[in-house]
Length: 115
Ligand SMILES: [Zn+2]
Image (tube, rainbow, N blue to C red; front, top):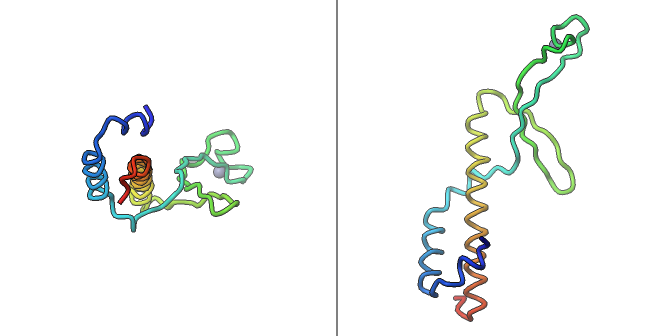
């Protein structure tokens, strides 16, 4: 169900209450880190290594990021995987909250009640 159909039955007061709750519960935006975590198995390239026979190294964790038109993979060291994972997950929650706040404001705007 889209925001639009979910928000339509709500009163202006309910929409404003819901918006206030979303703002109150918004995670700390300072942690924002956009990207997607990927696990990769790798070959090191040495001919006599076990990986040459298919027993790959890893998994290694990478953060897939987009900056403008470019995208790339950043290696995530084991000691920060937990922190980076938490930041990426929190960023998803922040963006979902912003999308809903915007949808509420659109609905209020459509009713001439945007303040
Ligand atoms: Zn190897």
